[in-house]
Length: 138
Image (cartoon, rainbow, N blue to C red; front, side, top):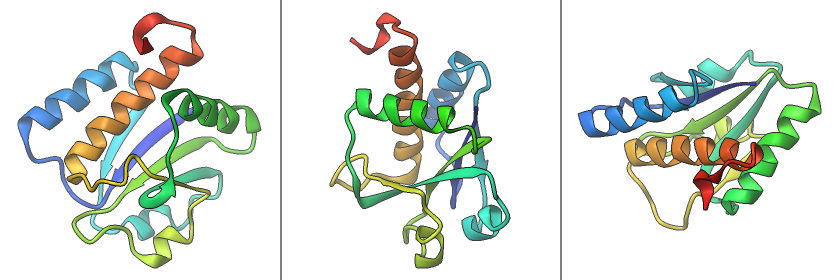
């Protein structure tokens, strides 16, 4: 399954970039980061994409439940990619949020978009370790 983290901003700080690159390497290129100025335009014609928006009002999941969610999407057979959408300073607009298949909350706290990307990619890595019964997640 192709996974993309789409953010309506840029990864600016080198330490965030380095962390993200490390997890991309560990995931063998399975996760791509897309920086755009307009997420809605990017997702507009994505017909077979499962869209997960990161929103404070979304559902909080444990790492195990997050892994199960990824497996569920992969096993569905309809979707060819998972898109995680992260808004910029103003968050995601209503039009973009309405396209969501699932609203995910990483916490009730607010994070910088750069922190959110790093935390999310680490959780994706952790999810695949859980799904493969590998020891990283413990």
